[in-house]
Image (tube, rainbow, N blue to C red; front, side, top):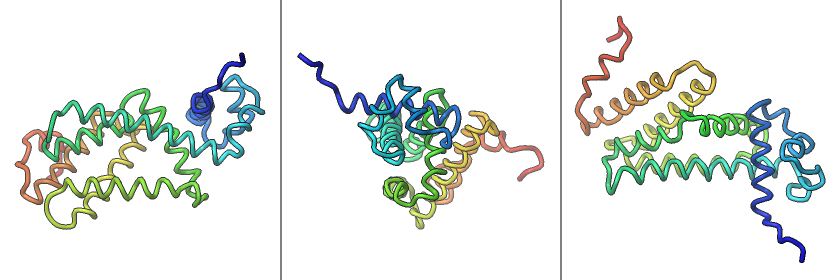
Length: 208
């Protein structure tokens, strides 16, 4: 009796191969042939599951989102029920930053996909919806007025820190210090959190 093929498992195998190629060589190196070679399957098999490169990219990003969501969920569950908003935000953003080998690999693929989607509006459609939902969620945790604008700024900081971490411009300690400083500003401005004494100690000499 022929072995039943798990379509999702096979597509995930191919998506994982795509992500390894993209992480090592950049998105320009991604092709049906290169992905097939990396996955150890034929080009025909890749084409059977993905008709175009865009389809492969969209599925690979869905895999990255699933992995990222799993990391965030695991980190947040560890906080217990009803954690303080600042702690919840810090934990969530820390889980989203590329601070581990696994998250760095996913982050390199996500960054490559952003560049790829920048000139392909159709490919960016899913990202746009994800961004709106994330901004709305973060805004719901922030005190005071202009919560949506401040949430957008906080997430923009997260994206910038992610790029600096991937590029080696920032260490993990530097990125987390910058995140803590911004969270202090966001919550202290609204009078929702006391000043933390360790923030001043982290500021470079000569700065107020």
